[in-house]
Structure formats: C-alpha cells, structure tokens
Amino acid sequence: MKPRVRFAPSPTGYLHIGGARTALWNWLYARRLGGTFVLRIEDTDQKRSTPESVQAILDGLRWLGIDWDEGPGLPNNGGPFPPYFQMEKIKRYHEIAEQLISEGKAYRDYTTAEETAQMRKDFAASKGIPEERIREAGFKYTSPWRDKTEKLDKPYLVRFKLKATGAKIGFEDLVHGRLEKPDEDLDDFVLLRADGIPLYNFGCVVDDHDMQITHVGRGQEHINSTYSQVALYQALGWTQPVFAHFPLIMGQNGEKLSKRKHPEADVGVHRKNGILPHALLNFVVRLGWSHGNDEYFTREQMIEFFDLKDVGKTNGIWNPKKLTATNEHWIKTFPPAQIGAALLPYLAEIGVSDAKVDAKLETAVKAFAPRAKTLVEMAASIKPYYAKGVTVDAAAATKHLDDAGKKMLALAKTKLLALPEWTATAIDPIVDVIATETGAKKGMIAQPIRVAATGGTTSPGIGDTLAMLGKDETIRRFDAVLGG
Image (cartoon, rainbow, N blue to C red; front, top):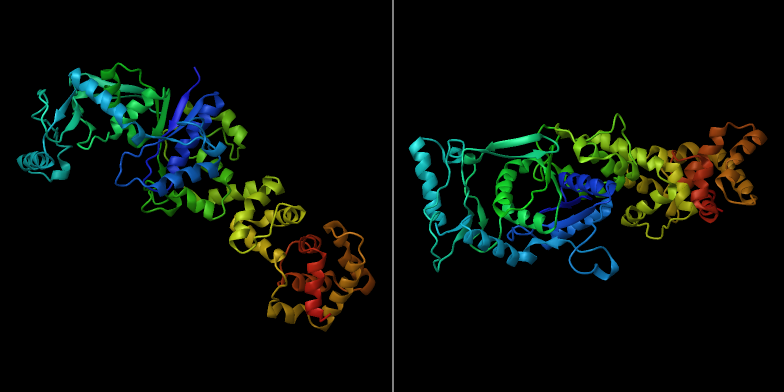
C-alpha cells in the first residue's frame, strides 16, 4: 500500500528547523514510495495561531521545495493546493465526541477550573510537595462526573473515559521499537474544551483517521501523547497508523533547539542569510539520518535513499560550520544559471534591480562561486559590476594609479578597444601582450587595470572582471581615472 503521510504544524510562529526536517522526512518517504504528502495546519490554539504564522510556514515550505499533494477544494488560482485547517471541521470533532459519550467511552465533566485547581493543591498539601511535582508523585485527576450521564445547562469539558486494567498499552515505533507503559499511568484526558475546541490528542487522531494517514512521523516529544492516542484508536475501533518518533535537534549548548534561545531554529533566518534551500535540506536531512558516509545528496538521491526505518535514535547536533560548508559545496556545484536565479532577490535587496539571468550574471557566478560562502556574500561581491562608475580606494590609487600605472592603463585601454569581441577569453591575453611589449612585470599591468575597474586590489581574473563589467562600463571607469 502506498503511504499517506502528513506534516501538521501549529501556526504559532515561524517554520521551525525541526518542523522543516519532519516535513522533509515525511515528504521524502512519500516521494520514494509513490505515496501522498498532506499538509494540515493544526490551528485549534486560537489565542496563539495567526495568519502571519500560517503564511510563514507556507512560504518556508515552498522556498524549500516541499510541496503537498492535496487540499480542500481546488488549487488557489491554479497554484498549489491550500492546506487543510482543523478549525474548518469542528462539527466532525463534536460528532465523534458525542459518539464516544453515547458509548460510555467519554463523559461531560462540569468540574470548574477553580475546583480542579483546588484538587491539585489539596494533593500537594497531603504529600508535602510543591504543586508542580504532583504528577511524579502519582496525582491523577478523578472527576466526580466520570460515571454520571446527565446533561446540564452549564459549560463542560468532554473527557475520554480511560479504562485502567493494569495491562500495558503501547505501539511499535519504526525508530524506537516497541514502546509501552501501564495503562493505569494514563488519565482521563480532555477531548473537547468548554468552548468546543478539540485538544491535540483528539484532533490529530480524528484527522489522521479521516485522512487515511498510514504513517505518522513526528518528533519524539510526542511519544507520551501517543499512548493516549492509541487508547483512543482502540476505543473507536479504528486502525492506528504506523508511528515513527524522530530524534531531537540539539543546539551547540546541548539544549533542544528552541525558538526562544536559538535564532538558527528559524528557517527564514537561513533564507535571509543567503543559504540555498537545497543546502539547508541537505544539512537537516542528515540530522538523525545517514547513508553510509555520504555528505552531499541531490534531491533525487535523497528520495532514492531515504527510509523512515533508517532514522536513528541519536539526537542531531546543529553545526553552523557544516551548514556553511554544505552551502559552499552547492554554490560551486549547481549550474551558474541556477545560482544566478537564486541570487536575483539578494541583488535586488542591495539595489541591483536590473540584474537578470544572462551571460553577464553567469560569468559573475563562475567568477565568485569558488570563494563565496553565502548568496548574500556573493551578491555583495557582484554588485559593483552592475553599478555605473566606482569609488576607487585611496590607498589602492596611490599605490597602483601613479603615472606609471596610468601609462599601463592607457595602453590596456587601447588594446582592449581593438578587440573584435568582449569576452574573458579575448581579454585575458592583454596583460601578457603588454608585458612582452614593455618588459613590465604582469602585476604592474594587472593591478592598475583591476583598481580602475573595481576600485580595489582584489577581484577575479582580469578577463572575467572586465567581461562582467562590459565594454562600455569598463572604458567609462578607465576614462574616469585617465581623465579621458
């Protein structure tokens, strides 16, 4: 059977790097086996869910190239499908809750929040412990309404009526193997809040069943919740999906990568910093999964090699140096036209709005790719080649544009103007020709050209540099120095 998998983020902030990895691994599994990848926005936390967060998640996934295969209704304006939203199916959760109540598997709990809080305080006082430690001391909430069936005209929660038999409840996990715990450790968890909104354990079970999800791949922080979900699947007589709980991603300080403490947890930060989307995917795919000793994978190779059963138990460690190295690798590896297209928004951000993927930009990419770490860095290096004129560094001018330097520059201008074509291949021999004719050292010829053309003493080779500038701009900059 072809798998149906899902990514189900809560829209309470940006796309977290751990969420991106969860989405990627599920997406790869579906793509490898010809299955279906579903995007579901779990927006039942109405106080924290925002449209801006939804958009940040969608933008992050699209930037990474993680597409989903279906959604409610038709695609928006011929584009990708909109995702599913939990709040659009409130009626369905209420139907299932009423079914469970009618079968004696759930109940209406009219206990107030104040009454529940008092139970917690009383238990803590009886044990002589702080209230935050009551769970580990064995506290289990017991509602006085558990075995009552009357329906009152007052707010209530709907709780699952757990049957504690002293047996084990558990499941097979593709990452961790068999996981189980005594069913008496579970309590009557809430299905619906008093406002009718489903809680996570209830909403995701109903959704995964209705969407025919076959495999649930998510972070290992959800393991404890899964026991309650298994009990719910059993009570409803539904077939539970195959579970795979992924290891955490840890920061370099040994803590779980969190939105509050780690800026690098935000996928958008890496986009802003000039990381290629594929480089980020290549980096995160290996945070808990490997394929031999391979470091770099094309998208096609990731799809071919990835399997949920190969995910390890060991937490991944964030390594910014490795991310940078991965980015450098793909900047050098991808075709210049592809890198050029990725550069356009970064160039536009620093004022180069007229750049397009053409021979000039591809030449620039070839020239700077061997030394660029990020697209931001590359864009800054390329910007001077799209400017009209250049500001020459004073120290460089003093050293290289004295009378002797200007003489070499004038000679270079004459020979450049005589060239039949303006290409790096045609331009490169100019320095050698002048050196042969004048007996001057090559550096005495190349550096005046470089400083006049770029304003500084470092650039790619003279041929590439002048080819990127173009003939008209090169001569304009030479004339600005020569006074011509």
